[in-house]
Image (cartoon, rainbow over all chains, first blue to last red; front, side, top):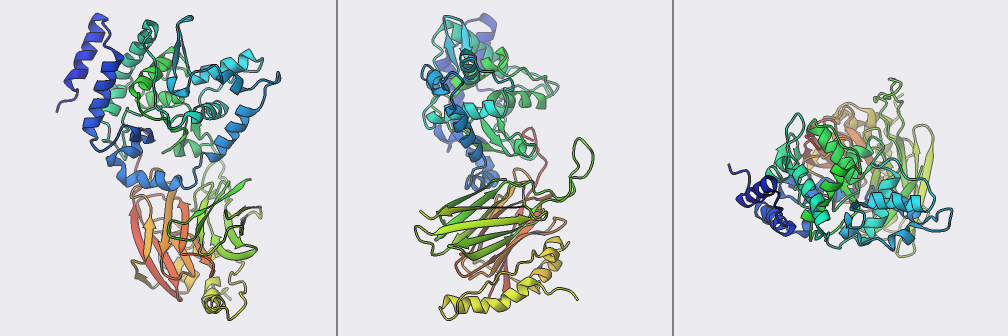
Length: 281
Length: 103
Length: 154
């Protein structure tokens, strides 16, 4: 069975062997085209619902629909909104910082002057630091997730559109793309193995989600995490968990690897609307 | 403990009354990860629903109900301005309540 | 002497409820205060139904609709929503293979519609019986809910 579509193979061998970067525009077309073909009745917008959008998930979609009758994340969203609105000791608020940020649909954004990739998590901590407050050290769940939700939810329904036109951004984008397609861990899987080639197929009782749409619902509320008392998770929390599950060492949240990966995924999600937070298994 | 209530138009008519209670609903079988001891049973036993002070439903729960239970009942002819309230007790005698107005 | 099941009392008083809803009698509390321990701790479906309703005889009814996933995402949180057009005095949810099958039951007064929804724990794939007491008799609809071992997602 053909595992890779020819176009993707060509783009990858070109980029890996000769350092000639295929354009993100071509990559988006190949990536989104693959899923349009694989899941013919799923529109681009529906990928914001994650695995719930896939026809193979029909038996389990009821879980999600019924839980959304009274979404379990509501109290966390309300708490996050209060935390977002609470002024710092110096009287300023997150909103003052965010007024200078791009829209959530443009994250992660590249700052050419400093050759730095900004994530929402990073900019929240930068805001705290600039205003004399303590930065948040736990970058996976709890307060940081609530604050990211408070920022990103303001852009719900708006479509992802990250600018990687600058060569510095493209370098990071290429690193993220390599990460996504590279095998890792004892189980020797790449992100693509499960979320592209095997998307919609089963891994024991679970259905593998499509890579398209990943990150548009983050931070997520996971039933599994809620039973351990830490229901919310940032994108980098999930990346670490996924790496652990293929028996690879997880990288640090907000380290260069996951930031690059987040950029690649954000670009692949061009055109998919934000839906924050989301309820997941 | 915080209990929340939502009143929505019922999908099969009337008004659905949704109550989300914060409660561990321990079965008494789970072992505490740190001490190795079984965490004792602790669950909501009865939840009473009232419309303008008059009971219209009484839900009995047990340890087989999920933690942070969501319970939904329905009112056939509630009117705008009516008050719906819920109160529950658990097997330790703890309790909580909530109320909302039909919009 | 064994305490009579509270719901037997409510069957008798359901006639009062019916009468009250016709405006003939002022409504009295049809709800006994006791938590139905025997029903909720019983280890079989029949024992639980007998303890709650005084009978375990049920008739299948398509006037009962179950909204629940065919496969649970997590056995600890399985949402089940029951709707019925039968005039319901009580609705019960039983997960047959649970050690104590009767997970929950609700007593409904005249102002209540035939709806009950609750999130249940299930240890294993099992038929889930949604039982409605109407006119003193028991009716049911059943749906199997699968509980599987998770994959990479947990």
